[in-house]
Image (cartoon, rainbow, N blue to C red; front, side, top):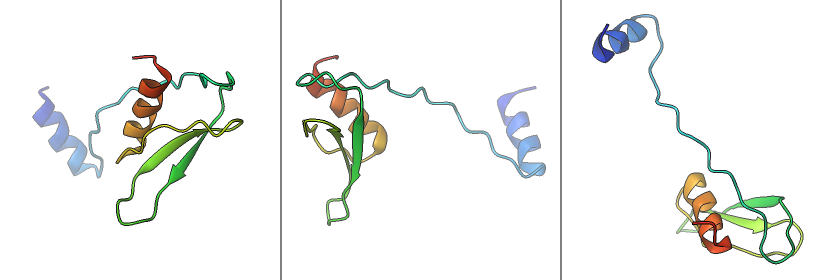
Length: 80
């Protein structure tokens, strides 16, 4: 069965196919070593998401999506 056939059969049954995306594992804070982060949702005109350390308020750059915010955190921490 091809992907198109599978997609058509799923649509007939009321489903849709969605590709799995791997989650980005967050690295610990470089300042205090805490593994807990807070995700902030910005409601201003620019919108987006930001990650911040739970303990010391170390902050990464804003991202347009949650995934981008996680990637920005890891870039700022220095893991990539």
